[in-house]
Image (cartoon, one colour):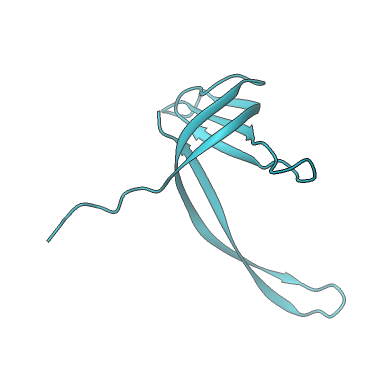
Length: 101
């Protein structure tokens, strides 16, 4: 019987950095980097993702390629329809991309 844990899913992110924020008071130090990826066509909106890291992965305007661990959590909340008063549950997920440096 194998006791190896399930490997963490990974994804390669390629794109241009649009914003970098550093949080020096958090230990270990933490960066959040917004990366705008290329659009699939001239008619599509480019995807933008946030990558969290413990070291800088680049500067604003720089084109990067970084491998990230993929994680996240399930989240749900209730909303009320203003016209009917009907309450429904919205189910979504918060995704986290963490740079593997």
